[in-house]
Image (cartoon, rainbow, N blue to C red):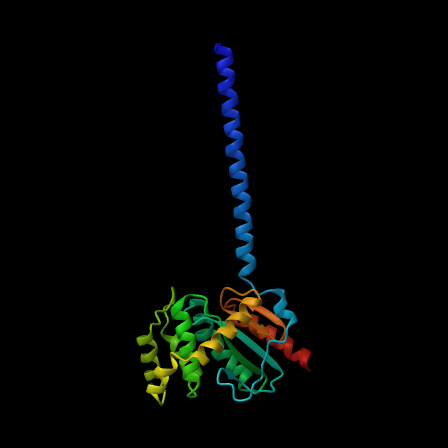
Length: 233
């Protein structure tokens, strides 16, 4: 009896161990899949490199540079993204000085508000400032005031304060435009475009047909732009 009982206990323990091992293995496999999905989604889809994303709309307030510049850099960003702020403060001014001002590069902004409701509100506010010729001033002011780490606080009072600081001519119209369905639809159009291309983190850039994920060092942008210029010639 004792032997039979011991054997039964032993078999029960083995069965339990096998079950636990199975749960661990399945959990590990699921975790690997989640990690892989997270890694893949953090980068632009290869589809981005096969599409012509530039719009080249004359007098587009969310673009800078000659409409017929040989190279176009499309930027997908979120106003609350700290890495977008790093790019705006450290890299963008250099690219403007070296390439935009000389007519070699056009930069086209795309809203990719993936960090919550305040991101959506800030994107609409940027469009509202653009309606009065102050898009890039708004852009610069938001990122200049953003914290080095963490997400910027961009409530409606914050957005109104920024608009006043940059000298938006008609503040009453600006405040009204924060609720504009038309401007919100433009933001949503950009967001859908980015999501369809597999983008769910910011910033992402596409220089002609070459995607760049993240606020890479200035030299990465220089080399990519120079290669695109050489190809254009």
